[in-house]
Length: 133
Image (cartoon, rainbow, N blue to C red; front, side):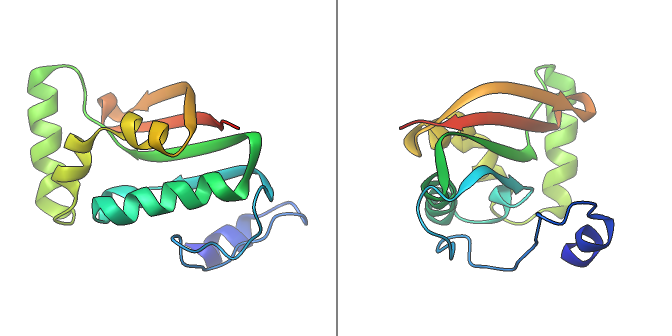
C-alpha cells in the first residue's frame, strides 16, 4: 500500500514510512495531522491503546487525528449481517474491537471526536478528532 501511495502522491512535503506504531520514531508534537486507517481492528486492545497514545504523542496540541476503521450500522438486521460477514474474514481481534468502543479508547488517549462520517451502510467510519492539551 505504501508503494501505491508513493506513486499517487502529488505533494513533495508528504512522505511515507514503515514504522512500529507503538514506538513512532518522531519527537513529541511533531505532526499537524496524524492518521490510522484500517489497522486498529487487527490487534489486541493493549496494542490498540499504545498506538493511539503514540499517535496523540506525535500530534501537536489541537492537531487533527483521523481514524478510519470498521463500525456497525444502527439497523439490527444490517448490524447482524455486516458483523457476521466481516467476522468471517477478519482477524480474531475484530469482535473485541467492535465491542470495545472506539470512543472510549480515543478519550483515554486525549483525543476528542469532532466529526464522524459513516460509509457503506454504517460498516465503516471515518472519525476526525483533535488532540487535547
